[in-house]
View: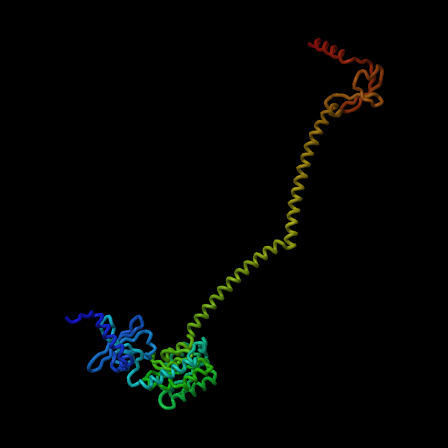
Length: 414
């Protein structure tokens, strides 16, 4: 019985056969692109077909540098790579490393060779890129004097900022002598001292755009002291000038957008700054005004005039208190004096005299307060309320006898 092989073994055997075939390891195949799909991973899946067959192809994301244009269905291309078997499915396909448009193969080879050479020289390095000025006043344009390019740039510039001046250098952008004309335009505008230079033209084939792939143009752009924006062809077109320029624009209109600032946006921005400045000034003035008011109030409080006024008010209040206390003290003393006067009045001889009592003295002025102080026949004075009575003592009685005598008289009266 013959041997039975697994599918895996057969696929591996066929893969080894493809691997050992030197011709299939590096082969170029021409055909028309169909079923072209750009995967989110970066891989490109497509088929090459001609009148009699079709070949499945894939270009991995790591090989995309070998594709200098946006490939689409219907393009006639030359694919360079290897043919191998995808062992899992048992299907063979071509693994592309480089894809060029058919008919542009020689030019594309020249393009890649010059690109690699200039890149090794550092002419594409980002550290040599000059920044595009934010507010330009003059824009130099190197392009054909007729056509849509200059008109598009003028329209965009007029819309964004009508105060920007455009200086056109009418250059030849296609055919023999085009590269030299472009170089002359770059050098002339650089010497003129414009703020930024736009170098560009409309779209076309690789042959039409080839002037912008010449080394002399690349060197003129690299050595130019004025920032340069490259705007060659359409968005999918890529030239050496795009790599060397300080900034690449997908279209000439986009180049004008990048070069010329929008005056209206600037006006709005300036108006916003003015409003912020006014608000800030108003706030600052209000804060300063409040501080001045506080300082003025503090100064008014601490001023000599205010201090004098405060001291004067203090003295007035002190004077009022002193007067009030003096009046109260006087009233208290008056009351005490009145009480003393009343007490003195109660013991005053004159008051006694007013009440009908008398005050007796010896002739020499000595007060008589007892019957034992007088003798019969002695002369004495008796003070009454309206005068003095002089009399002689006829008889004296002590108090006990006088009380008895007064008692008897009282009984007789009854």
